[in-house]
Amino acid sequence: MSTPKVLTPTESSTQLKWFAAIVVIGYAAISLIPIVWIFMTAFKGTATAISYPPAVFFDPSLEGFVNLFTTRSRQSAEYLAQLPPPETWWEEIVRQNDQVIAGPSPFFGRFLNSVIIGFGSTFIAIVLGTMAAYAFSRFKIPLADDLLFFILSTRMMPPVAVAIPIFLMYRALGLSDTHAGMIILYTAVNISLAVWLLKGFIDEIPREYEEAAMVDGYTRFQAFRKVVLPQAATGIAATTIFCLILAWNEYAFALLLTTNRAETAPPFIPNIIGDGGLDWAAVSAGASLFLLPVLIFTLFLRKHLLRGITFGAVRK
Image (tube, rainbow, N blue to C red; front, top):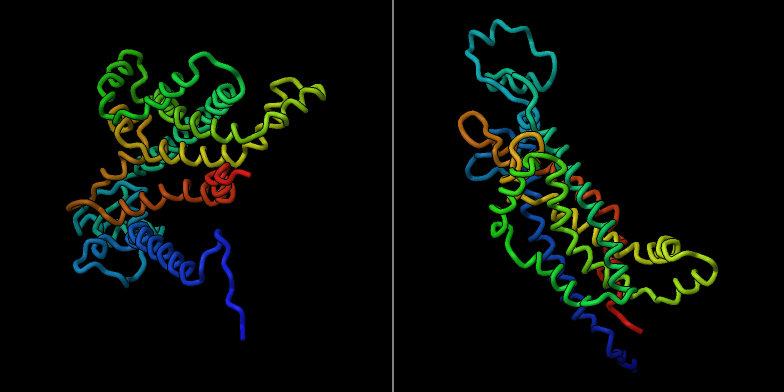
């Protein structure tokens, strides 16, 4: 007769594990449906993208990507008949819709603005946030709790509450529609999150490591750079992803403070208008390409992200 397995207080039963797995897989599947549908629509033709009922099975087409990266003009059949045969596959796609390519679209420039502003503001926020978090964690700062609460309070108000004052201030300072202005704004928004998250990570690093390094002749900055930063790498990676997602996806300030030179992709993608209405294939193509950098960056740091989120959750 077999002896029943005795579970420890921290061990779950097999049935509970299966139930938890089913819940997690089901939640992940439901969450991924909109993203998968966006990717599918990106490879539909313009007509297929607006068909009803929606087409689940279809012939893949790059029409959406062609419409995303080009501006087109509709021409008469007589004019098109006088043109030489199309030299490229994208010209052939455009000709099938009785159009010709008039030039490139502004999407690549808007996407590049997102890269510059998103990654630039994230880098500065992480650098400043790490140093501020280290100072709050290691030094006796007067009114430290009040200062930390003040830093956190900057995230308690919705962006629309400060949109008009910031708009007037930026217009007076000449920062409207500039990369520097958007980087400064997103850095100011993200630095509070960076300070609060990184302080918790640095608090978990024993002070004895730094003290031992300084006994061996390291300066405070050398101990911070060679001892604390490697130990806090997982927390920095997790904080970087959160800050990048916020700066990458921000819409309200980008819509209000940029018009051309520094306009990012979020306010531009919804305005991709095609002949006869909204070009959903091009919009989905733009959204798909816009998702890729953050997705790749997150996958690249996924191990650090998991470790960073759970850092300090279990204390010995």
